[in-house]
Image (cartoon, rainbow, N blue to C red; front, side, top):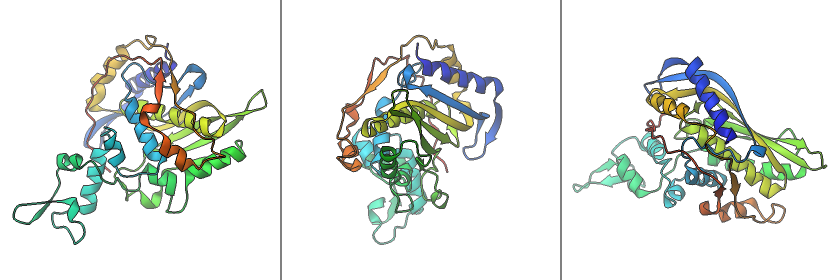
Length: 322
């Protein structure tokens, strides 16, 4: 059986049974929501890849590498066939440029008409370009917080020096910059917590906080992403990843997901076996700067070994909003 599916179905059922429906003002749709939930997965039960609906593994790997590189332009994602941030990039483009009359130096961000006038790109035209910033997103906050703090580099160095430190935190929620990004971060921070092992070595758990949780579409993605981040930290620091745990707030389904949730809950969480993640060992962090390590990662290098799943349950992703 896949343990992560048992826990995921438990959460979904709790929302269905106990959730309160209300009108979400940001998106103009209804949401069924519970206030909070704690989601935990131990790596002794395999890698946390949901199997009761197909996981978008390529997108999970590509996005995480993008974050770790400190890249906030969707060019890298699009070059690898990953379109999940294009709507957010377009949302940021519209918010940033706002009108059809570009100032000098901004012409490349507009379509030039035959009569020499300009207009803003449509979403389709913008996506076809295959590049564009999303503002001060996770990538920027993780690697260049307030323009001067590389939180990931600091995290890795401190893990190597003192895995039992209570200061192993990375914050994506920057109050001074929540208006300077396409979408304020939903998973707002994470912390590495050291655990002494019986053999005298040390392991760690990775705990993340999430201010808002799109449970059906987003959470399986988040769970696998933080699971992969934990395994990457394990590989470059030598400390064993033991578990991940998410403290989830505003945990919801959107009303266009209700039928999909019903279908998911009909599926047997015991159908598929646990899987594992595999990727090449790279240079130890003591010998190589982490930028070199992250730039060497290729999406295709990351494999889910023994993974199988039920069919995809298609649900339309709602338009991005601030």
